[in-house]
Image 1 (cartoon, one colour):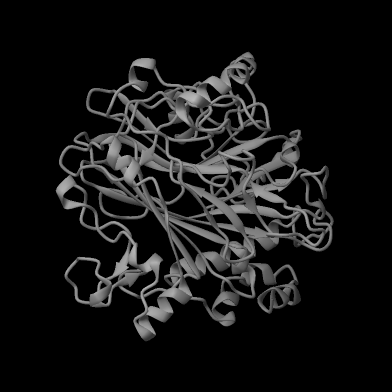
Image 2 (cartoon, helix red, strand yellow):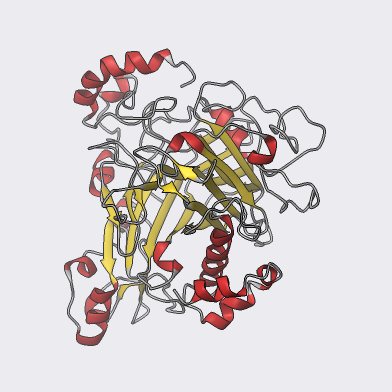
Length: 523
């Protein structure tokens, strides 16, 4: 992955690999654009009868002002089979009729060490060097999955709120409700509970004849999204040819959802993942995190940063003009990932955001793309590829003050009076990725952890650099959107009143921006 010359040879052989694996070329590290190879497996394993085929399902979450592509192989927000380009479009169609994308790809990463000091990792980027995840749940007794079961679960399930409303009011069962996979197949060792549903008679079996229906919150304490999509995947269907690490035995059940509203929630999407250790090994020094390749319009001129208190990682343009055919133009937006919920400690307490790390799309041995298990694990730990600790300020390398969060502005509680951003450091804008992670913790066999994130987007109508209360670009509005998203999460995704939201913005009122906030709330 570090060898740029590999990309050229991969292009030459891509058509042969495509025939062998039945999947298309994909966007690569270092080179942005179609094609730089496909997942490669040892030939002996390619012929094995019980090796899972690569995940092939993809579906759009598009009920509001966002259209994003979701895949069922541990990755999302891009198209792997047609254009192989970014697929996180917001707004869905801009005033000029163009399709502009605010992000390229994202996925969950995992890493930990077993009792024999063996590193185990699982993660996904672009499938150009391999795969770590495959469709379907694991057998709860053996932590295995068959090729047939992978194929059977190579799909995603979507339902719209009007379908649920009609079912509850009149009993009409739509095809999406009928096919909702509330339960696994017990004869194949799969867990009883899969996609979340309201269990009207409490028998634990999804049955629309008994009044059961899909829901985000089985206890019906939260709001019903306007669109909800569910899928399940695992890391035991094949060798790990992406991170090159040993398999963990994780099963990941993900629900993506969105709301169609007349305010900033209309620009948001949400993702809740239930992560279950089906394996038999206790992992110590375990880390989990959300990896993001946030290509904001023109991917070549981006900065990244984080707001520690909000658990918010974000990407913004290097100046007030996002140039080029892919760009947003003047007054570009900012996109962020809110890390609402992560792993818990042994007492069940939320650990919060432990690290925020970034790297570049290049072959630099310190800040470039990872290529082997220890490098993925180091990034999850908030370290550079070679295991060097991050230091506060400048480039984050070679200093004397330890840091857990890259480019936090003035939000790092360890250095509240010493702001640190990419712009302050004089960095050249470029093609960035970032990882928001939690750890270390212990992951025991059978244990379940959760990660819930929300993606927020905001744009000003005037330049941000000269506006003292808006910060750089649309960052201040993004923080407002982040607070609104956090309030949604705290309220089980019930839409809050304007008065509740305004209580969270007292710090902005000191900036004499009351009119701005009220205008924002009245969208």
